[in-house]
Image (cartoon, rainbow, N blue to C red; front, top):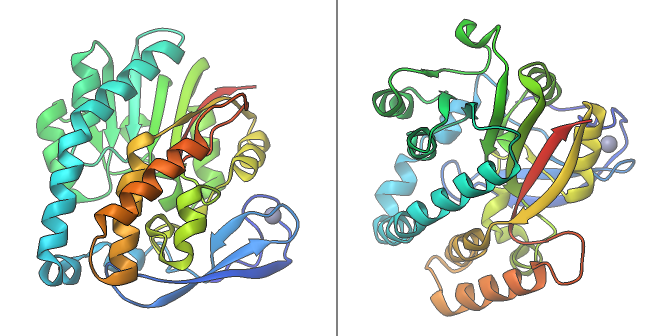
Length: 298
Ligand SMILES: [Zn+2]
């Protein structure tokens, strides 16, 4: 384990306890989420060091003990995946300067990367999990590397870089943002999607909120701390967009952590309410369970 003594966003050292959360899927250990008293950034602290976090991604326990739930969640997830992928492609084509090269950081098995490649983009990916990376390589034609520091990516600059629920997992946060700045073209588009701890479902489920997902989620970004972090690295947020489905998916998982079984009625109504409260309604910014940040260089 390692303990951060400086806030990753503002570098100050004055923190307070925010919430204690259990790792519901793998270790069942308790972790602290701390809040910086200066910039309000939320982060898991202490946290497993980079070289020991791997064991917290091995979910054998989760699979063997919760087969029914796993199957239900997988079915729900797969049934909307194709739709959400098409929505992602649409938003990238809307906000990008041109259709060119794209890097999907943390591409998993490459579903999104393959789909946007079929849409006319030249796609590269990174994925630390060797199993997932192998699948992605088969789909994309080998342009998938272990991480952003792979030598093949060294001299490249991309028109678009995407990070779908990835930045909250990255140990070297500031270093990663510097890398993104160096590898994005001057008029390039950066898309970052992360959970939103200020959403209605986060408030409702509290310590059971599935998107805290400690210790795999090292940071819990709000709109305000995301903007501070990006500003520090010469990026600016152009727009925030909702992820409607995440409100339901995260609510379902949260009811399972709370009551050991999925409550469809509770999670359905919470998801609806979360999307309703988080929608654009004469406000400048959305506040759904997860948020997509549309980002450009300053
Ligand atoms: Zn801070």
